[in-house]
Amino acid sequence: MTTRQGKLIFLVIVYLAVPRPAFLSSSRASSSSTQISMTKVAESKFLWTGIAVTKGKRIFVNFPRWDTKSPYAVAEILADGSAKAYPDLSWNSWKDEDPDVGSKFVCVQSVFCDDRDGLWILDSGNPYLKGVLPSAPKLVKVETRKNTVEKIYPFPREVLESASYLNDIRIDAPGSRAYISDSGVGAILILDLETGRVRKILADHPSTRAEDIVFRVEGVEIRDKIHCDGIALDPKGEYFYYKALTGKVLYRLSTRLLRDFSSAPDRIRDGVERIAEVGVCDGMGFGPDGTLWITSLEDLAIKNWDVRNGLRTVVQNSEIQWPDSLAVCADGSVYFTVSKLHLDPSQAVPYKVFMIQPRR
Image (tube, rainbow, N blue to C red; front, side, top):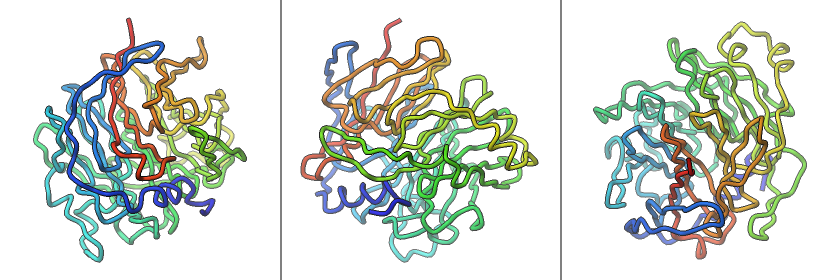
């Protein structure tokens, strides 16, 4: 495994050769933890990573192209637990050697819903982790009320490397910016949503690089060096939070620095704040009350953090096997994917989506 592709190389090794029959139906069964109930929303025989949920509780997931068997790149989970290609079959029809990488999903790593229910789909353009395909990396915005693509933002070649893997996305609507993590090389991209201009910052900065640690998930030792991965934007849009997956330290930057493309690189580096140690986590996101939710890999848990109370475990359960991404809704409910990336494929199926509803 390489240190530049860390998590992703590991995932491909684990994921290849998984049998790929049709989706399993959702049972909406409940499982319990010591602290809070956890409801299963859906499950699948295909590995998913990202999840996004609209105000009306429409659920979207994505399937990264790490082999040729995945049925879709992006899908909507329907009420009966089945999955439907989203926004349509055409966008999900890319095959190897297909030159149409601009209007088809090549390798989607994450999805995100903004506060107006716009669905943002981040295409890494790096199928099978063999390198970024020219013109393939892009951010696609879908109007979920009409189920149509509203805008496509291609990423210019100069802000990417062959080993780049665009990982997570957050939308700063007041600043007309999108923030994207590159876990393949360790960097953050800032996209101007009005002009399409893209800026790369903190490349190889210690805050975007993996820490020198080894972590374990259910006894499985993970030595991969996984760079800047999970990101989050606070409810007021004042601060952008981020961390490496292989690492424990959470950092943040003022969005005033990020919105201003004239901010000097040294000024941005000087603006990096070390906030707290929150453990090894994959995805994270803020709730409407300003609490930061994180997926805790080592503890098979969902935790949250704030300045006043520090880090707390909300739910810990043996079924939370590599919680990958999460979506925090306005009503406080939290949806998250379970990807089981540390397990042998024969042990991993089915992959699941759970929901927790914190007590009020």
